[in-house]
Image (cartoon, rainbow, N blue to C red; front, top):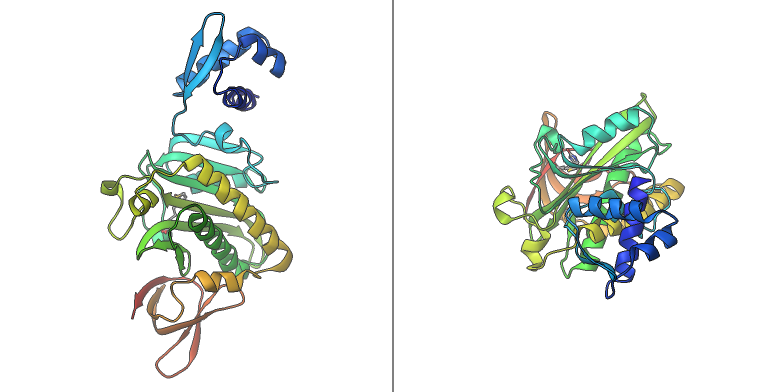
Length: 323
Ligand code: BTN
């Protein structure tokens, strides 16, 4: 209700951005009292919205904070399940993946979204940290409950990478690609990482947490070596709320397709791959695989041809590209 009313008041303000709108008009349109409108206008002000109030004229919105509040992300979001149900927002959290995992264990449904402005224990792949300062990044985790075996997980992570790369390429003039398994890379530098965590029975998935970290307007001094941000590459600030909505919408389309057809976006993923055709060295647990990356398999594995011409399937690992 609280989220709803804030969202509705903001929609009303923005529709009438050029004019003052009276408290009475808002209260009539929303079916609540004027005192209630006043209370929520003040709550919005406390969240950083600049709202002018002029006696006899009404309210006018002057500016909005650059925050990924749930009522901003949900506003106009054209999805059916992804980010459409519960959205859990925090200013700061240990890790959105941890929170999403707890919520999933407590039974929260597919599509539940966890968002944070910063993480003090952001998790990366292979036990690494994901540096997550406030003011510029997107840190989100989604609960998914696909009815699939654990061997399908690489395909789901790859279609997430593919939908993110597609959205970045659509809204900027950049040429983002996928470094297998699921890094999004622009001009040779990492802009986005994905961490998929699962709870599974021996052969079936109970749930999957898809964690996405993107350096959007992150200041250069706060990005680890080898990384970059959208702002760094374009010299423009990118609207994080709009980008988050675009990503959720694109991912939902591709995920629905995955649920019907399996990994049928394989060719699109191959087209966006920065790994295929390159010489690679992959560390997978305690083995090292060297060769040329020649294909992405039917379920998302990387297929590597070694010096003797033998093909090997790799399911996860850390990839170094050569040549
Ligand atoms: C990687 O490339 O190593 C994966 C990075 C994944 C980072 C995201 S940020 C949101 C979610 N919460 C986390 O703790 N990690 C993921």
